[in-house]
Image (tube, rainbow over all chains, first blue to last red; front, side):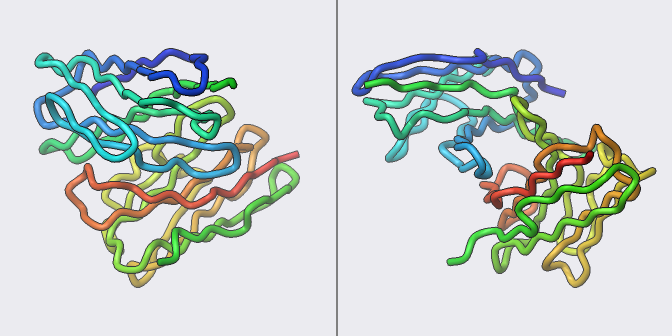
Length: 112
Length: 115
């Protein structure tokens, strides 16, 4: 099963671009990579999901290299409200079933 | 549209006591998940339901934890008896489909403190 590794914390200033990388060396062919955001006393909230190359939505971009052993969440021009914990999730679906493996999370602190 | 509802939001009990958590998923969502989240850690899956069927309970400590999802809608997670190490946040999530990588919608969680 794929295991994920993320930096424990990152610091940034308002208006900067932030890139958070997740390593998932054992990712399988059918695995998807999903990123969630979590604020204190709330459940995680979906940000973006991808399988390969690049995915972009209204809040973030997700870059996945060809070997898929890592993925990078990119947050353009962060604001104070982006201060949160960010988790990458690898979902493995195979004949044995589906496994959901969250990383330990990256705490992003945005300052003015 | 109402989100995932969980109750209670907070619970304090003494060790060896029973405790139950309730979750009502988003209407129409077939898949329901229960997670445990310790402080500073990511969520860990306890059990996943597809409709009424528990399709993955491999990480559920079955000697003290139990769960049910009658009629394939709301669900209850129970701990009996609770231990000090069970203090954590218990998250419920739901998703529309069952193929594994659909977007999960999380409730606010129940914060359990065992004294």
